[in-house]
Image 1 (cartoon, rainbow, N blue to C red):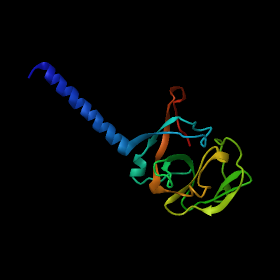
Image 2: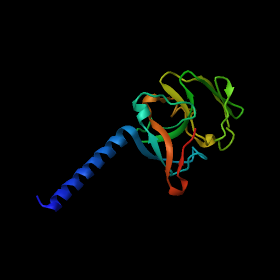
Image 3: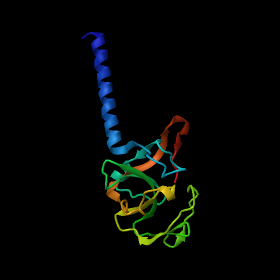
Image 4: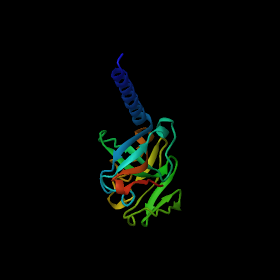
Length: 175
């Protein structure tokens, strides 16, 4: 077999391996999503691209308070939301006087863009669900809205961990 054919065969094998690895990684480990809207300001900005760690969900790890998750919006299955977990199953959540209370304790939320308006609850987060809120609470469609309500663990795609686009905004996503 001529040298160029051997070289071509090696390139094809390498390319196929790269495609298989990319598919496996994207299916089971990490995926990318585009932030749509301003509900997570100032933490995440409209049209930023984030990497989402999916393996934790696949292994049955439950999200924790403060995690920023991507989940499938149940009323429009083709649409995903990005929100912060404010309450986990069994927590009693309440919003009053511009503050979030979890199990009766006012939460320190330095990432909020403005004080919250309105009230909610108290409401206990049912088993198999989480209570989510946007960081820009006054314009966020989140668990306070009956169209979103509590988010089932099965609908969670993963946990956002890195903003990778635009390049000037590359950063880790913190709790």
